[in-house]
Amino acid sequence: MTLVIFVVLLLTSMPIAVCLGLASVVTLFIDGIPLSMAVQRMLASTNSFPIMAILFFMLSGEIMSKGNMTKKLISVAEACVGFIKGGLAISASLASIFFSAISGSSAATCASIGTIMIEQMEKKGYKKDFAAAVIAASGITGIVIPPSITLVVYGVVTGTSVGKLFIGGLVPGFIMGLSIAALSIFLSYKYDYGEIHKFNIKEIWSRIKESAFVLMMPIIILGGIYGGIFTPTEAAVVSVVYALIITLFVERSLEIKDLGEIFIKSVINAAVVLVIIQNASVFSWILTNDRIPHAVGAICASISQSKIVFLMLMNIVFLIAGTLVTGSAIVAILAPIFLPVALQYGIDPVFLGVLMVINLAIGYITPPVGVDLYVAGTIAKIPIERVIRQVIPYLLILLVDLIIITYVPGIIMFLPNLM
Image (tube, rainbow, N blue to C red):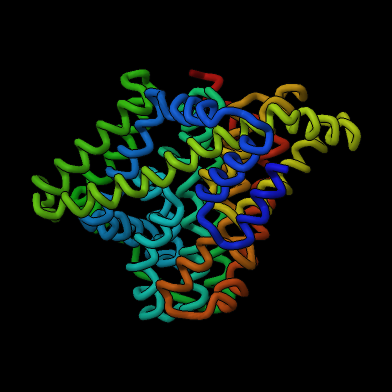
């Protein structure tokens, strides 16, 4: 009943948080369960120390974006790979990886890098639809590479170590980013896109020095977490302080008067995620009481006892889900359902969480409704159909990455196992 109500509401284009809340309330009324139970679940779901990381990582990403730090990342990337055919396309991929390690958001990465790079790429002879496809594909690393907001949500709703999830997403995120860059090189040679500049080590070193403070931010965040200096939540606070110091006092790209708008936008964005988590916690609790996880496990067992088959089925579910609903919402809804089943197959919660997020990331560029396709198409001012045609090769190579990562678990688990 709850799932049916939720799907019907979702088809009416209501916000996901409203769909979750209304479906849960209607079910509680029908079953005669006091609404106080829902309130208790909602409060408990967000009454945790790790969840504060969501607001602070969003805030630091917004500060760096408004402070035009994206331009410095692109400048370094261009200097490092400008001597390769398709250098600007590769620069977009590399800049996206670095910005992902600041913003933790796919849409933010796509928008911030795309706003600058699509116009530059068009001026240098790249087709606009190809440039938009590169930006859309590169942007998906935003929810895989730490500090991923979606990984924080998974950690909160399942009780999994956020630090281990962050470290687990590092290698897969780089693999995906490098695959996108490699394909960009191939396509640039094939269609003769872009110019080749002479390799200049002095220019590279000069731009690295100019951007040193920005480049240090991911190192401080990840190094601090991996080295045990601070928790992911403390790292989020450090990232905000560091971003403020860089933009206000070092680069002076922001003024105090700009902070009000930044704070308000970050709080609103974080509030949306928190409301989704709260409503999803009630929704998942109802599904658990209805023995939905047990039913899912029984269905999987009836199909096959193989872990390989279960992972394949899970990938399909999350790839489809990622095209329809935002990653944080899907994780908040489905992670509590799939985790008990995964544990029966001996799958580590860290591996499961990172794999879920990789699937959702690929879903962001899966036609017809992948969110990054619309973001890139809007920035480039072209119909989404043109972006879809150009993004297909990137989608295929990312699916190959997904298969490899799924069945070589060491890619995700190697670094977390060292912690």
